[in-house]
Image (tube, rainbow, N blue to C red):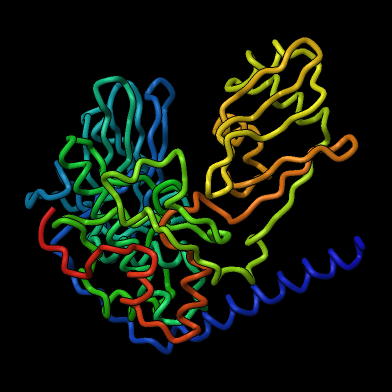
Amino acid sequence: MFKWVSLFIIIKKIIVLAITITTALLSPLYPKTKIRPNPWHIRVLLDEGTTKKQKTFDLSCPHGFFLLKNPVSKKKTHLKTKKLRVYISSKGISLKKEGAIFKNGSFKRLSIAPAKGYLSTNDQCYDGTLMFDITKNKSFQVINWVDLEDYIYSVLRYEVYQSWPIDMHKVQAIASRTYASRCMKEARQTGKSYDIKNNNFHQVYNGTHEYLHLKKAIKETYNTILSYEGGPALTMFDACCGGCIPGKMGYFDFKKTPYLARKYPCRYCKNYSLYRWEKKYDFDELANLLRSSPRTSAIAKTAGRLKNIKAKEIDGSGIPHKIVLYGRKKTVEIKGSDFFEVVRKKAKSRSFSIAKKGWNIILSGRGFGHLVGMCQRGARELVKRGWNVKKILSFYYPGTKLGRLTNL
């Protein structure tokens, strides 16, 4: 059995490598045209931390840099150097070029843009401007001010497979642009210093890239979003919904986002490996995790040595809202969300059942992600079946309308 599993993993890696190489070979066939500029710029949080310890950023650009007081300033200073080092500490922001430090601790906020093209830092290349900011509470933020369409171009590279068909890229482009627009609107209403984070909870963004064929999806959906009651919809998406019906979730508040309360299942992702999944925990291992996790330790310890674990208050989407711990001292309950945080490394979603088999606990679950909004594997299958972009988006976000981003 082990040999067959190993062989399957090797074959899977070969297929992924072949797709990557094929895409890379095809990319040069696409013209290196610039993406049409969007009047909107999004502020992406790339890094943040404390100024108690010095933080260093090495920037490079073959055409030099522009220094600006803020990302939209017309007044700029041209630095004719290919490399620039930025130091952030409690004293302020310092710059070093050509082996010598200048502007030592002179800034609390500074924006740096490439004189031409893009700049790179931490092995990533970025369009737009990098803003380094030291906030009042002795912390720092690094924010990339970038054209919204360039941002979506990057997100397509990291949120879907490049080998998927153009219509799937267009579906994802509209969903991602809408989600970003929603974040921009909320951030500016609340006065936040950035609009969106670069992570799995928002959208994965790692700067520019060379998968030029993705620009077609950007061009053909330019500035297009899904709206609800005159504003950008909250277009959440995940990898695979597992056939769950999001409208039956007991923990999600759909009052402001009724289009996410889909009352019918998507089973178009059923051929994906994580449509159904099973994970095994050694009973003592899981018991120790429950006793050591900050979320569950206090309650778990009062139960004493655990004898069994069961799910309770399971909603219509298969999500347990209570987990019962049967201990030698007493029987206690913990929140389903807290239990999920303990098993997150193995569990692929919150929709699962629990069974004890011998000295093991078996989690049998559905889907991969938060199970709300668009199912990417399902949407990919609908493209394959000939559904158009509008019909697919209407299926996953019922009640929304396609339109143009005109204001926030």
